Image (cartoon, rainbow, N blue to C red; front, top):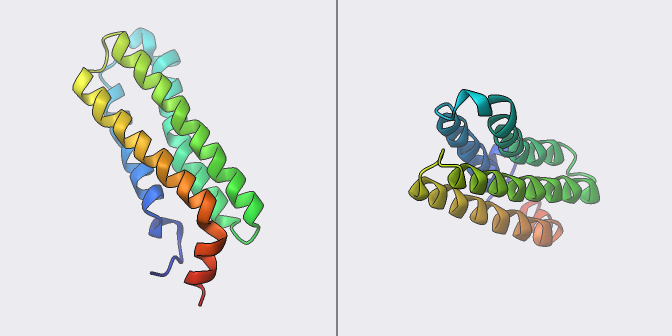
Length: 127
């Protein structure tokens, strides 16, 4: 498996897709939440793939790449908090909350694994 571009990373693709799902879900939130909860959850969810992509562009500097992956992990955890608020406020159905939360748990695990193994993985890929 060769990773030549960011979209070759499964975690990037999943995080982008889930951010788009959150965008679609939040279209139905109340108007009074537009500049608070909707804005926050959209920003944090979009920050995950954005940080992965920015870090990937700088992957030559492993510490910089890892720092961006760590920022992506933080944004995924922040998004989970906003998902909790969305469900508790009655804007997001429990089943949709569960699905999205599980996807963010998976994203977090994938980011953690990538952070732990990037240098080793990168050497194997470049052989």
